[in-house]
Length: 329
Image (cartoon, rainbow, N blue to C red; front, side, top):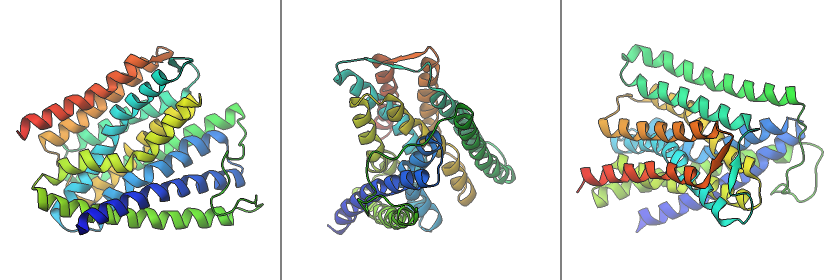
């Protein structure tokens, strides 16, 4: 089936390109002498967030078809839902699988609490926008983009204040095993990977649209459930690996940094290019996501996150699936 081949091709291209993009971005940050916090929380998070960002961008901006726009909206709401629920549950499972330190010490994780607090503010504002008059929507686009720039500046300023120095990435540049003194090869790798991400997202959206016509399933629901499985794969795999290696900060920051980006920049694009009038089911999707993030943010302020608390976040996704099942059975 052509649509199945497109789905697999798009998924593979997205995952491979995301790996090359993240690797290249880390080396660009190193060559430009950026602080470690800025590279990890901002540049690396941007790399892992690009796949789920490009899917709605391609679907909403470049696809006039209504069903493909629904796919884009599903990707906008589905990616944060997966990260705030399944993402933290996977981290909890990773903690349970290792023998030492069965909890996350959050007492020194200023970035994590900042990311989650920002997510609650920005994503909540995006959801409330659906009840506001259309002229105010354009003002909200500017506000959301401005909020993310402020958040990024706050993280960079915090790293500079703490005097954190950047270190060479643990993995060599994909295009060259020999260290270079200039960032041009790393920049070339980032640009090539970006092209791969765009093509992969285009293949995936086209295939998903064709699948909805075959199985007669609402495009929004199919994209909420299926699209994040492919686009969040790099983040989930990275978090599992980092947890097993005892690098808890990287594992959690990989998730919360992407959540901060998806709660502001991605909804801003959707609000700007499509009617932002959410249905009750779409609002339920966003509300459960916000509540899951609120749960993790509240528990993280107690200086420790335990396995049962992280797994509880996954129950919000179970509730969502139950709601969907009750509506379509």
